[in-house]
Length: 360
Ligand SMILES: NC(=O)c1ccc[n+]([C@@H]2O[C@H](COP(=O)([O-])OP(=O)(O)OC[C@H]3O[C@@H](n4cnc5c(N)ncnc54)[C@H](OP(=O)(O)O)[C@@H]3O)[C@@H](O)[C@H]2O)c1
Image (cartoon, rainbow, N blue to C red; front, top):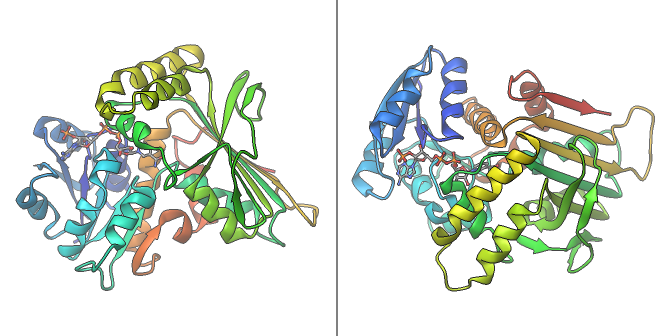
């Protein structure tokens, strides 16, 4: 019988991982971990199908983390802040002989894991960035590069209005510096070009409500995607429905010596202000300019969801399934590099958290 550990399974992302895996793996066992056993028990109570067992575990306690991972076939980590947790859970999972899937993590966590020997990696897979962004943002644009030569240009717009909890707010505040990406940069002819783009103010974009602000940020994931596909140019924008979040981040980053926790309430409040402005929605828009346009070759993909956190949970659950099914090779990977984009989109299209998909 398969045993899946979901660490942080009572959180915004983790609850959905638990829900989907319980439905998809009805014969399996789910171990739902967190520091508050009542929240973990509530997450277990919401599911039918697989037997779900709440487990009290603090990931900062070596013995508790070891016990949580022991006997798992795969450990899915949705506990954060991810950029503080880094490779801690991955190492414990691999040492216990389990595969590892991380709803977040990005380059900093994968680099931490790859820095030196990784006990237990062997034939196991460790998958980082198995969420929406990073994750789907680096995977789905690949569907615009099939059936012909790579597009000459790819534009990515991801954003909307969604509640941000304190844990994710810390990660948002820590998303700065060259290992995460470069503001205002574009990818051109194989290199990061600084100051290539300007913010787009009050623009109308397909799939977004009303007018939005789009901030150029060439993420590490976007650079990898551009290099992988061989596009001449890639522009990557984070989309905000008001100035509230960029303002909160700017104020926090100006406060150089402050710990990120000091500015968490402001980021959480900024996200609430966005929600009040438009209601909950999140859109991923990918647009390609093809060198060789051909009838039927897709140039645009739009995906809509009411909740990017919950949808990240669906992606992490899909990734865990692919790992368990042997569809991911052993080693340390980013989800966007090893999941199948068409298969993933097909699965997402049938999920109630995806309220629209247009591939045209
Ligand atoms: N890739 C993406 O697109 C994407 C999107 C959204 C979020 N994320 C990332 O996903 C992670 C979770 O975000 P969220 O919004 O779901 O957070 P959340 O709602 O606050 O949930 C956090 C979960 O982790 C548990 N947890 C926290 N600290 C823990 C610890 N020390 N030991 C064990 N469990 C602990 C919490 O339970 P207890 O409090 O009971 O311990 C809870 O179950 C964050 O790192 C976030 O950055 C990624």
